Structure formats: C-alpha cells, structure tokens
Length: 118
Image (cartoon, rainbow, N blue to C red; front, side):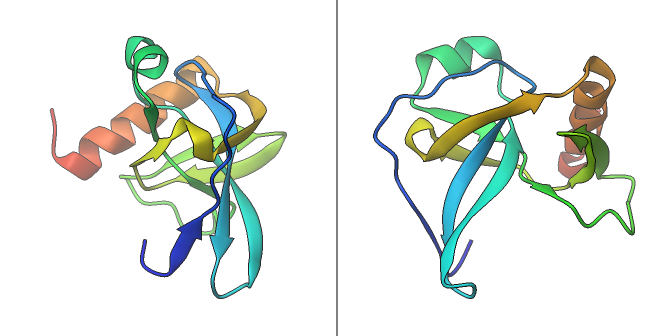
C-alpha cells in the first residue's frame, strides 16, 4: 500500500481463523489514524506460532460485488472482502467479532478465485 504508514502497537495479539480485529493505520490522505476491520484467514496454528497473520481488509462499499469478492456482516453492518495481505500482530487492535462459518467459506472461495486456485 503506497502512502499508508502503519501505526505499531507493542502488545502481542492473537486470534483464531475468522476472528475480526481492528487494524490501525495512519492514512496519509486523511491525516489521521483510521481503523479497518480485518478478519484472519491464516490457519490457527500459524496464527499462534508466527508474529504475523494473513488478513482480508474489509470495506463498507458494497454497492458492487464481483465473483472474487465476498459479502460478510461485521458488527451488524454489511462489508466486502476483496484483498488479502499479511500484518504483524503489533498492528492489530481490538477484537470486533467473528465471521460465521458460511462467511469464512465465502471469503475462502473469493481468495481461491483471486489467486486462480481450484
């Protein structure tokens, strides 16, 4: 992400696949720290052992949803998952919620489509 500087928190964070945590970022265009909900998509063993987790940042812009994107509900509000990335646990902030099993499966399918996996 060009132009985005991530704010680092020193507390160790952990979670399970499907857990949604806030990720703090300083957005250079907004000039302030913003929080993005990011569900964990890496497996639980990796989440426990590594200092980073694979996440899918969510957006509230759900006006158009493509086949490689997944609709989920976070904190009672619709959201769209359409990217994948890794973040260190220090960048994770508060727990927001957990995706349902069908939502986790939808995110997995979207990742498979994005990456061209069977």
